[in-house]
Length: 383
Ligand code: NDP
Ligand code: MG
Image 1 (cartoon, rainbow, N blue to C red):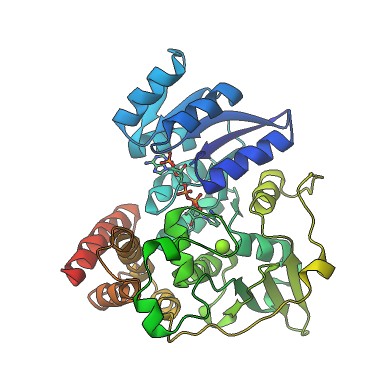
Image 2: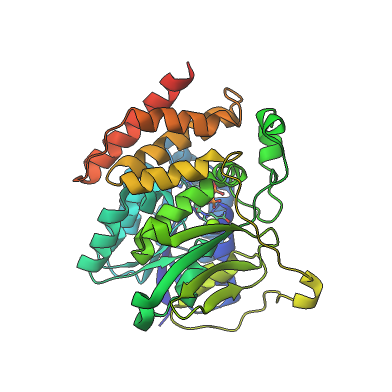
């Protein structure tokens, strides 16, 4: 029986690579639903090829455009947040890949888990903003969150359940991004086009900007805390510019397990799709003699204060990580629109965090409300 899957964000960087994984294994997957925001031409192509039963678009206008492109009255096209939620929460699915960007991944993730469907989670903002609720929901419905983010997939692959009490620390690796060697004054002058040029990974705009300022690693620290129930003191970030080791787990006996491969997101996507199996694929292999050397260094928290702020938000707990995330999402948007400097992104996050007193008890609606407040507060911090 093919696995019945839904892919949210199928036209994005992760979504397109997920479609390549589906193509790599003919007959193994039935694509039941696809969702994208505005790139209806590509979504229409994907629909023509995979013939899903349902589709969703980011807006009503996009849904109308899609309807005209596919000329198929039998395919129900939904739109907006409720479209994503309906697709994710359908009955009879084996897996939902959540590969939309930002907090809009949260509701559909919860909808899928609520149904007892396993979630392959690329969207990190979901765990950052509401990790507690999401992890509890998966436990309550006895289903799994399968990490797609490469670092968390690496940890997942190196984490020995039977020895979980003997885990000494998690070592999250980071490429360091395009500004690894830039001075603080150079960072001040960075333009969006430069920040969008990542040396190792081709990703969507939001995560690429996050990566350039180590905010992405900050989000991943919080993500790791929830996925592996690990205190922040035991999560360490290590710059590793070659991006061959995707993360490591250190045990009480001093042994360190690392997962290595070429930087290719199709691998963690495939691992999540077939978990717990490893299947043969035709993707390129790493040649260590060609890589030559693997190097490591500590992150520079002074030039990249966004990382330290994530630890602060995580340790404050409750709703503070949602504020870190919401302020960052807005700040990245303002930077891409050339309204603020690159170095103002962490300054905006810090400003908004200072104004928030975290609630330790919260539900989904509080998180969404705090997210809206954080975005407004981020704009106020600028103007
Ligand atoms: P992209 O920006 O490339 O893709 C986002 C996808 O979401 C697109 O398909 C987009 O559609 C779709 N989308 C946007 N708005 C809506 C909406 N309202 N309804 C339905 N679909 C929508 O992002 P990435 O693929 O880079 O990242 C996705 C997530 O995965 C992020 O949370 C990121 O942090 C995480 N991630 C990404 C990695 C990567 O290598 N790219 C690595 C690890 C994690 P459209 O393009 O049509 O507008
Ligand atoms: Mg990552």
